[in-house]
Amino acid sequence: MDIFAGAITRYQYDRDAGALVAEGKGAGPVFALRTLNYFESQQLYTSDDPIEQMRTLITLGLVDIDGEADKASAFIENPRVSLWVAVFDAIKMDSWGN
Image 1 (spheres, rainbow, N blue to C red):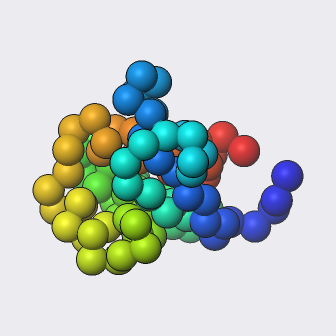
Image 2: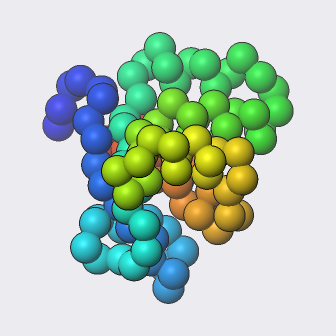
């Protein structure tokens, strides 16, 4: 177990699982996600609104899509629902689940 946050992991979407899976085991764009540290994770609680909490987590944890930071920014502004939830879940699991 790594005691430090900030590791970047690359994922692809698996439509059958409805989740992000390790790069090369899914299809479509590659999402680079970074684990949050304790202090970043606490920023989620500055709002009681669950949508804002999700936006905060994804904004902090999504590094790029297909190697492009601009795609990540555009995704945060105009996400596809199934991918939004999958990205949220993957960052959450990487940050809290390990």
